[in-house]
Image: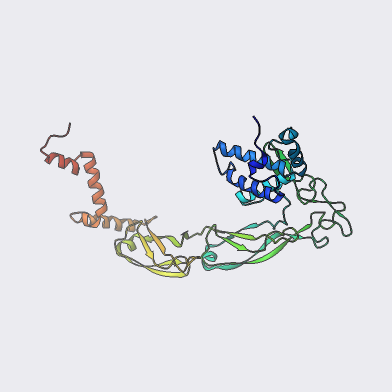
Length: 388
């Protein structure tokens, strides 16, 4: 079966210029690329035909042979490979249009890498804000060689393997991929006499101290960006950034959840029974909390506005106080005697009034063992037969 005319495949005249051919191919590749037409065999075939046609017509020698002898003159020279330089350039352009980036060609100066520093601070500093000095490793362009990596007066040669591109093209079936040049490791150059100061790297390594302002309200996981404080980029490219990641130390009294603080407060049995005021610690100092008479263990009290001010808004959280009633220990004989008298005074017909939870609990226990619960009582009063 004869192949279709390459000019007809791309929809151009035989007199079309190189630019017109490239434009036509770009249009077809964008339309029929397999990534834009998944599971579409027809689109895939059209893409392959267009790619093959462009491979031939973009190469002046192959195009000349094709114009004179047709497909017969190209036996063994076509078939969708990536041998032609023009095809590779256009394919790189297509990938840039489709995927948002270049596929080949020399890269520009690379920006410096971003760095991260983990900073541990106290809860007090996280809530109030502070300024901290940190010492970090730094990578700077070598002053002795201005980043070339070569000793002053020595030559820097263009890498013969990649011809200065920093990358080499590797053929893998239908696709070609660019990889870092193994000879120059991506620099595109070879240095005969390395700089003594940086040993040919083009950079020097040292340390520097930075003052970091910690805003009030930060929490574990928050990051502070210091622009331009990362690693140095290649000559002509900007430095990277430094990100200071916050970790707040565990506190001996308070536990933080978002903008709220939680605190466990032990109180005496007498204070819980009689009520009164107690001093509660807050990050801003002591605060008075009113304990109602008859407070039970596990009861929570909210102290509005005693939490943390949000780092992202003016909202201030609350302090949640969890009360624990402390049972007296190591009692004297007299104290035990008084407690026994007190316990006896609670018995009698007013027991239910003094200990409503205990009364309700033991009533439920009794009903559980006797089976005389509310559902049983309802069944006894129900005259209808149970369901079969």
